[in-house]
Length: 119
Image (cartoon, rainbow, N blue to C red):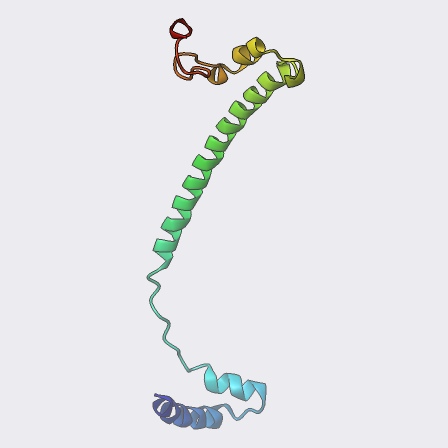
């Protein structure tokens, strides 16, 4: 492949140098200005543009979801700030503030795990 290129280039350079009768940079420019290098067909730009648009859409959706989460977290933080300190809470205050932590005697009875009437 290199040999074919050189075979095509040598006659072209000789012709150009005889036509131009220049030296240095101008001779080089004159010789190689007629040389055309084929460029490959662009087949990937459309795919890249589609990926870029998809990424922009996904990013916008993520930003909106993040803003919604931030609002929820700020509401939860405000609730925590409005409570009395944990050190001052009683069991009833804790059960009122966090109902999911309330002790359930039916589900998790205390030891001895038998009804008191049977003792």
